[in-house]
Length: 244
Image (tube, rainbow, N blue to C red; front, side, top):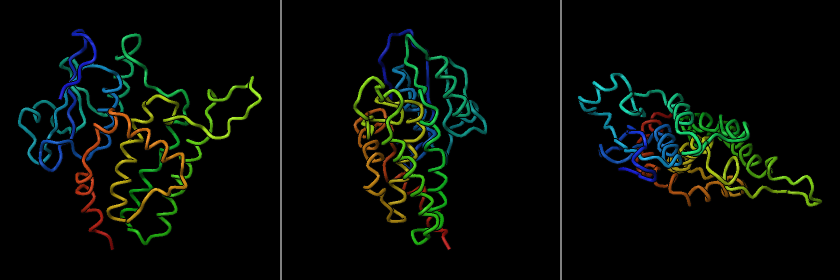
């Protein structure tokens, strides 16, 4: 797949991501989706190659020996480690030609830092473990409070009106940032896997979280990069089946 939004002067970029169970479609890998979203939001031309991890092609073994997706070819140079790739893209694909994606507020990155770890502990123990479920819900509550709390830039200090509940669409405002590219793929995995194997739904009382997810679902950068639900379910089948 190729996305073109700029002129032919764009760098040559190929993103390698994990393939699904059919060996072709997008597989379950929130880190792969994270970089997929970053490149899409940058508005740069790039291609995406899915890698079947069961039979990694010989040419890819030569290209990136011992490396699992995601990895990147940027003007022919191999880039590995998704954190370093993200930092490289933010520095290299910079204004005025490409948008900066870094959030203004550090807490936009920090607020969801533990939610995936708490989910992982929860799904390993199963739906009847109250402690792990409470830990996961605590992280969702923290996220919800942050999303419903106005950011500094939402507050007009010259106005007599008090901003009670934030109306912003995403973590750091009304634009998707690197913080969203990090958190949204993880939230998608949590929604699908926790529902399938723990009958867990994000409580509707978390209005900020649901506003966030619904706004994200309207953006192609997120919904078009998501793996199919079956990919996530297959990925966590073995985890659920090993419960004691």
